[in-house]
Image 1 (cartoon, rainbow, N blue to C red):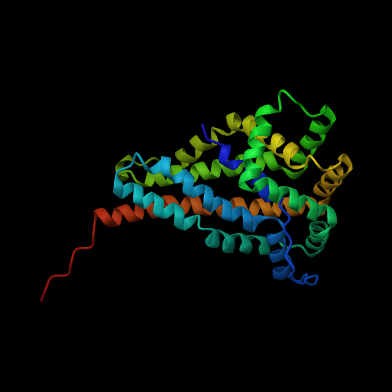
Image 2 (image 1 turned 45 degrees about the vertical axis):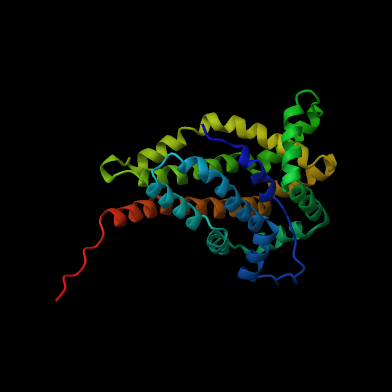
Length: 287
């Protein structure tokens, strides 16, 4: 079973709407508008968290491996999941997803007062002290439950943004990266087929989803405590709009496709690194 505690900050940061002081790009400027969406969506902060969490997660995965295999796996993970490399790839995916009218309407929401207010709440919850408070809140929610109407509203927001499904996908992709990397450390004759590894990871989806759904509900209840029901409804309305659906899907798809590509490259890089170490090119004979 996957460990999901490190994923608590993932949905928080995905919808973080941290704004820049730069002048807004003009309409019909694909790179300018999608670059602004990249920053306003919280993707920059999220990619930094991927790198931070990866450093913590690698230890248990490599400690049982022989030194050479462990070093090859660690190096591949850190290289392929480096924040700057992921950022460049995500930006390319976002630019390909550009649709002028949807982009402009999404940016109007991201720049709005409610969007900026949500940004502050999301970023506060994502800080270390916020994550600790969230864990405490989640542990005690059973003894002090919020009103049923509030829980219903939060679940509508989860459905509108697709946050549970996205987080499940992200968790499985992270597990795939480690599994493919570990597979690459095995001798060629003992390596599993990539299709079989992917199927084994995918088989965890149904068991993982309820756990993540509860986590997302708790994280949203905690993060948005100070928002009124009307403000949450406004966010739901945007998320259910054509532009909102395009925005959420574009951001999530860009990130997942980037992580998927990095996961595949990890396995290939580990296998290539160890293969080169075991079968060095013979030196040219002296003449």
